[in-house]
Length: 155
Image (cartoon, rainbow, N blue to C red; front, side, top):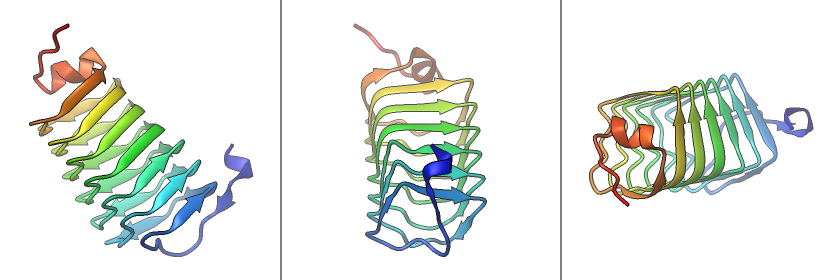
């Protein structure tokens, strides 16, 4: 997949459609890229330091060794997306919709999932610390995440 993707150059723009784009080793400081759509994209070794990606959508996207620090990801949509070896610290993901998303070998510290909807979300070998999960709608959630968030799931 990564070989078929178009390399990205430059900054991110708000309301932009990124289809089949490869982001390698980029650093986005205070990016203003709200309402973007990342479709079938790849992020490797990318750093988001601050910035606003509110209402962005990630569809069929792979993120590897990508860092989000104090980034606004509120009201984002995540579908069929995998995050591997990623770190999220002080990130706002409130009111986001995550469906068929896998977090693998990730570190999540002080991430605000408040008011989000998590459907078929899996956390494999992840470290979750101080996650805010008030009012999270859990449709299908890996038991490991529920335990880390202090949530009891009953049938």
